[in-house]
Amino acid sequence: MSYLVFSCSLNPDSNSRVLAEAAYDRLDEAAVPVEFVDLRDLSLPLCDGGACYEHPQAIEMAGKIMAAEGVLLAVPVYNYAVSAATKNLLELTGSAWYGTTVGLLSTAGGRRSYMSLMPFANSLMLDYRCLVVPRFIYADESQVRNGKLRDPALKPRIAELCTTLIALAPAYARVAPRPPSPTTG
Image 1 (cartoon, one colour):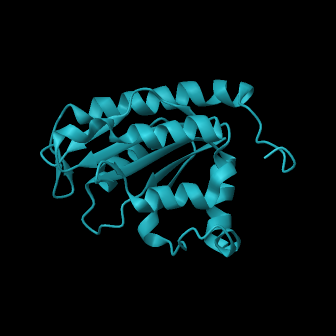
Image 2 (spheres, rainbow, N blue to C red; image 1 turned 60 degrees about the vertical axis):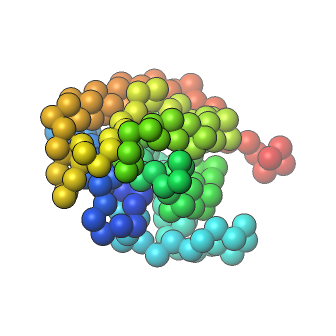
């Protein structure tokens, strides 16, 4: 089984990408198979509820997610929610997330949006029966800036998130719910 790290910001100077890179490095150091996916490198269509699901990159991302034992999503927070690109990824790949263990890393402009990941986490848990690692990373612009982790406390927190993901993912994979059949929705 493998792990995926998604950088979900489309900003060329993304702070959440810095978190994604640090998490990728930690998983790589742990000697687990890991792949880094940057949404900036893809041309995913907007989810239209129809033809978008046949887009080759949407199909490819769904396959990667289904094959992964654990996924880390590094997301920017805009307007007290995960970025539209993050939500679009979920909408395009839908049931591929069933039974996946997911960890969250996020950055925002201020310190007060730390709860903004909860609606997205709730969707992962309730709609797709994901196991969301209960400890996530939230950093504001004073902690991550100019392509660097500025707060020394972030590295051990990222390491803890990765260690927890590696510990939980195989256990959850053994008991994870199966996606509903097309007839039961």
